[in-house]
Image (cartoon, rainbow, N blue to C red; front, side, top):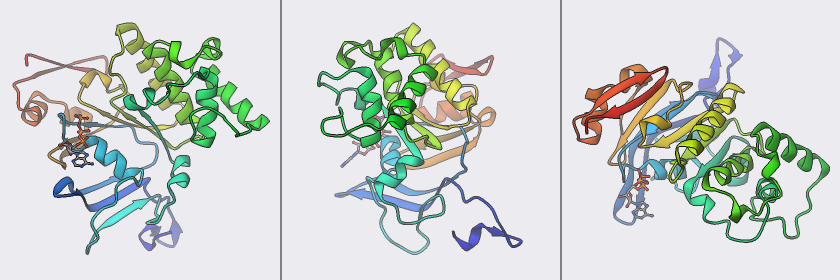
Length: 271
Ligand SMILES: Nc1ncnc2c1ncn2[C@@H]1O[C@H](COP(=O)(O)OP(=O)(O)OP(=O)(O)O)[C@@H](O)[C@H]1O
């Protein structure tokens, strides 16, 4: 544990994520530009930004798919540790992305999509699931209310149903935080309603949510903090009520916008 996490002789939990001056380059392109952020465990956050803002690159940096340039004052820490093996990160972060769904093209059941999350594979192949894994999978399927669909081939599920199985897969290691990268693409109104209710249930059960989106209605009422991102930088970070205003969001997306709040949900109109 880092010495900064000792207060008056007592150890306190280090933040889930601590980045300081994180810059990521790919060729001559600066994907992330001097990002500084601290995220405590269990916090529900939305990362909002226009196309190309660097949101997915930020997630890739969290998951150690991208590494920052070295330099003085650069901090790149998860749970107080600078060095991580990618497989160890799974107990901290579960990931759901829209892209992930399209990697499952083989004929496997929804249940096996969840179960194979234990092995980070697509399907079980030579992996043998233990009774504890089977039990955990069944608990997750019941929690997400998709147990009745578990024997269906994944490729025959609707987008909304499939997305909930991917959440299940992301939950097998009991991650501290679930990261969702634009997960509502192609969901219809009914599927959106169920998907958001599912996220709320997960947030209320104590798992942190980091939602990456450019859609305000994706932000569940449990979200307390908004980070605005553009051109690889963070350009706003604060409490939801302060950040989700017409002035902030309009300036950020470069359009005049009116923000309406209704029972904890936010909507943008007028653009
Ligand atoms: N591996 C890469 N090499 C070069 N440029 C990249 C690479 N990955 C992303 N980019 C570029 O970096 C910028 C940020 O991309 P990123 O996918 O992180 O943005 P985003 O906010 O997730 O966008 P969107 O909302 O459209 O998914 C974009 O201009 C993208 O074209």
